[in-house]
View 1 (cartoon, rainbow over the protein chains, first blue to last red):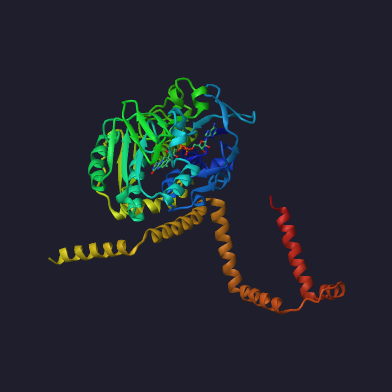
View 2: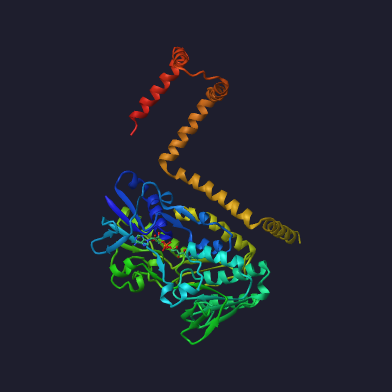
Length: 379
Length: 117
Ligand SMILES: Cc1cc2nc3c(=O)[nH]c(=O)nc-3n(C[C@H](O)[C@H](O)[C@H](O)COP(=O)(O)OP(=O)(O)OC[C@H]3O[C@@H](n4cnc5c(N)ncnc54)[C@H](O)[C@@H]3O)c2cc1C
């Protein structure tokens, strides 16, 4: 019997496990293959929906489902986080002390937010990157009567376009609330332009100008003083704020950082095409956990997962790898409350975002509702 | 000219569709489509597909034989019947041939299900 162990029950882990259950359905039924998923929680959160929770467009319950219900019922599922991952022996030790052995391993543990890496950031800034954070910001926005809002972007961060989206949506929200003329929105970014990707940065300039959004680029956050309501950069710029919204920095999981050689910052060294852990052909890395220098996005996780599904099932059935990952990333960009654009790119094609339209915005809303089909390995 | 008119009409039709939609309608439609697909996706499981086909055949047979109509009549009759309660009325009911046949059916069904894994 071939055993596949997936560590992590988020976007990447769920799509891999369900995709394998589809491709190896016969083998699962006749007991020649076993798929197990380990996760840190029994819930599955659709993280991109947090943006909409912030503006009261969706409720918490619409973004969360039971993880067990998302997985094919033939997949074994344990809420028992990995505490040590031995990629040589392919043995994983968990918090409860159990040891899981496997023939193929997929590490998809995502990342963790580390706002505490910047002094004062956790205390002084709102962040919508968690359920609690998004709800707190939503409640603050409800009573916000205008003022200086700083949208502060830190690196590295999850989702390449969420900072632009929250900024544009905030503009429309304040406008609708009738407090835009009493407000000022300032967007800070760590490199010397509006976005790490030059074409996206060039595209964002007129979009921000249109909305009157100011920016402070080359702004690497040094500290926040919540009592004085100031935020200061390493470059020596200090901004006052009435409301500070941060896109917090993130790191890979501690278990990856501690168990895997060369996993600096918790990002596992990954072959950018085959997606296996460098030097190991039966340990795959998927989603935010890789150290591939592309966006940490759900779509990245999705496209990588599809490749891994094809490769593991091909290895089990035919003894050979099936295909390469081409580096594809696709992101919708909400450019306000009613219009959206999108961007896609891969290892050879640079991004080229188009003009925002209502249709693309609606497409994103529709996708949000259809996400669960992706998690189930159908879309 | 005719062609151009056609294109403009299609464009206006699409525009009308887009203007008539709201975010909420889009989300409701997408949710319905997603839920529908989620249910239909179950048919990709061979066992479920075979089971559903057998069930559909069974429903067809039951309908042809009039059993479904009879069942709905039974439900109606039962709803109207008064239940007196008490051990004697239960014993008299057990003495009726149709009750015995029904119990026989249930016992047979249970025996068959017992054989399943
Ligand atoms: C506000 C916000 C907006 C976003 N918007 C978009 C967007 O518009 N488009 C887009 O493409 N992406 C977007 N993203 C990014 C996207 O959500 C992530 O990139 C994606 O979830 C990554 O998937 P993953 O499976 O790698 O990690 P996750 O989905 O985070 O899953 C990691 C899983 O690993 C589990 N885990 C953690 N530690 C352990 C352990 N020790 N043992 C076992 N399991 C463990 C966790 O419980 C979790 O289930 C957004 C993210 C946020 C926060």
